[in-house]
Image (cartoon, rainbow, N blue to C red; front, side, top):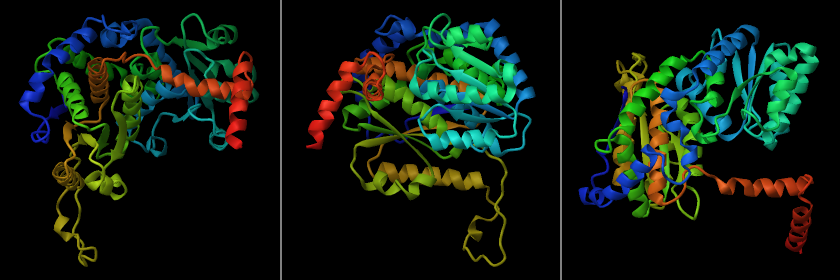
Length: 446
């Protein structure tokens, strides 16, 4: 395993007495997750997913990925929230954030249906011109506005381009029996995969929701599941000496000490979308009942030149969880005869060595500035490591949520904006809400 967790920077912020004081809370929360008997337990299917996933569907996904690789130049993944963040995080984690620009034997992959931007849609359609295209639409209900609009537009594009062969290029991931997409898949003969009933969107990356795009990108699913299986073995068996338990305790203790913002920081731009996935995981799981840490993210050293000043000397309401990507690649900095930039002191050193000193220097500066640091390190960006890291954060998030005294698996607040939007758009059934909103807007305009 190439992952480690350390409390080396937490000494002046969290004491052994603090840890002992929350041990019983932690043990209770751990047992609720492990034994699946806490609030929201009907959404704990992800706990044993690394071992219990549907092997027949798993093999079909691999075959579908090969078919897509062989038949298209551009693969469009339509989804929002958990229906796209995990897959995109995996692709950029393993293949890098410049995946589409690299020379490769796999299609370019673009994610759409995660906004309502006409300019974004026009750009995607422009990219598809003169190229073969396949689509994977991912939605449990099939009625979510953003992916629903995108699928209408892009399905029409494929039908105009391929005629009655368009159905061979459309792949659906949705509910097994109900929802708007299921009858469409059956009527038009789209190959389909199942969004599990017992796994919420933000925990679904290792299910069919994330697997097809990940496989199309050429990522080894078997290796990814091996990492997740090893994580399940490591984190679900014993409460003691458990890094998931430690991480959940650190973040809850820091919250109780007034640190209400958690920054997930990393020193590699290929971690950007992983951070976005992490923000949904923790934000949607914990942000309810007036509780929870606010999850934010930064990429170093880039963001040290924009947010570094605030982190160092702004309000002391935040702490950092730092994932140090420490991968030696022998990229050596050469000496320059003129030394015009004054950087010859770096000659003979690797870029990763410089990066590691930046990580160390930043941790020391921020902890001196009373910003606690939870230190993590990975020495590989492999499929194995991704599977392991995903499971680590999922399990830790569930423990942490139960420590807060909330249901980590629902998201009641997500519907608030949708109700207003549907009312403003005149969706049938929202007539009374539409009337009330316009009365409210009229009062605001006075």
